[in-house]
Image (cartoon, rainbow, N blue to C red; front, side, top):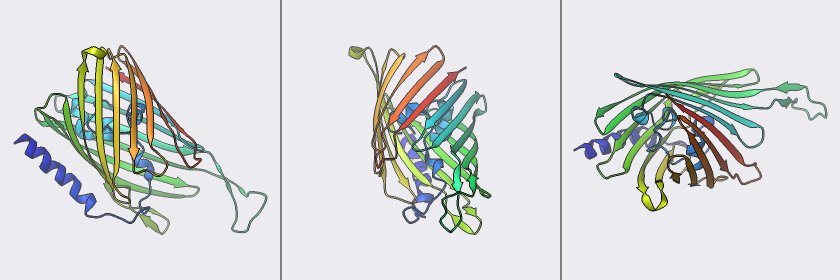
Length: 303
């Protein structure tokens, strides 16, 4: 019965996005799809059934109730070219459920302003940035099934033009009766269109379904984790994410993954170190098409 409930909830999440697919490249504010955390990045962003930390506010608000106590995640991403990505998320467990908050900011260096007529001398400089704030809530509805929702405010600015929008994420998280198996589904960025001046465009909606399998392996003196996600965006074809992690005595972790269906991304690599209640993570994402590679750093605290 519980498995049927999870499947029905998954279908409810998938329907709104798949029934309103846009043309390829039609969605904007794509920074809303940039993953949170270096651990997830190192695992190919196959993470919606793994996110048992504060990054669950982004990956799957339905997984937030699995985060014990108070958890804080900070992330810095040196993206290709001059782009920088800063993120922070916190979750707090209470007797009424788990509450979360997230900040996301995409920044770039100032660019030269030029007129319609070509000129060797720029007219000055202008800046551009994107930010989003989210508040989230999740709780178990039965002992092995949790639901969560996140409400986001999105703001973009390019020079003197700006746009504001609102979006909702919702997720379900299921701990299977099969030892080590967890299942999840998420629908993200359902909301109002963004509008710059007179131009209006859709948010980058998507659905993800995925699962993970985790097992202690005595011969390796550690733990092995494998995860797989399928992503259905509203402006492109299906994308697959696969990731794996080996953790030695829960102190040092090695990670690898692959992102299929992307023009410039593929393999991912990473590692992590745990010291008491502090997690330090790093991920390396090779990027093709001469865009430059991506380096992600993460810091996590548990209280």
